Length: 258
Image 1 (tube, rainbow, N blue to C red):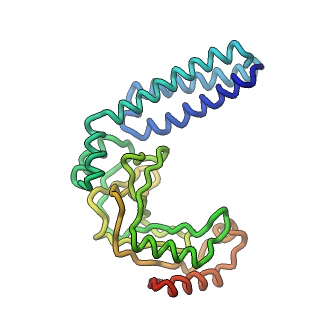
Image 2 (cartoon, one colour; image 1 turned 120 degrees about the horizontal axis):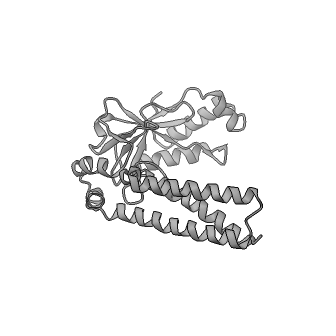
Image 3 (cartoon, rainbow, N blue to C red; image 1 turned 90 degrees about the horizontal axis):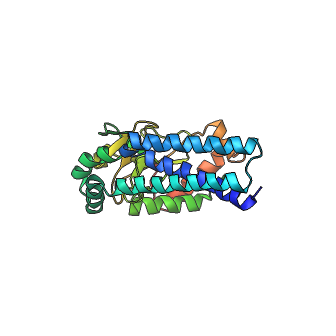
């Protein structure tokens, strides 16, 4: 068995999976050509597993399979490039950069799959991460981040693997309900939500497409956390931690709405 070739094959198959995730969040990724690419990826994955189970991944068959996978990688890269080269995509990127929300409302449903128009009827929420490496962040650090977010606004997310966004078309991700496993949550008034807002059909998160969301946020400090969240934080004794976070927020001049 050629370990180097097998390693390259495993890495290439993993890359195929990531590219499929990226492609299939676009409308173009749900068409016949994209579905054919997915079927090809599944077939190549099955071939690799069969060879492995038969201890057949020696140099010759592994190299042939690797060449086929690399050909598929090229096709997937081409499909993604074709998405970015469409008039609608180029227009959406320009509109996003210019802050033209009305244009984005019309363009984004042509680009991303799994989005539906969203008009806020209630306030929305954004959780401030309170754990790092599974442990609670120091209250002063948490308060400093809240102060920064209130001053600078919420930055958009352009994760290439997340549905409904990419690096050129990022969005601020908001929740319709305040999460029950977060200590500090920012409440964003519905009147401050720009027109370019959509809801992920799967998951329900609200995506607000803008360079940065600035709004008169209200800081909410959760009275209690669920048992799972406390356990994941190392068996945190929540009341003293909550009191310390409140004190840090107050010290930073940040009002808290319970």
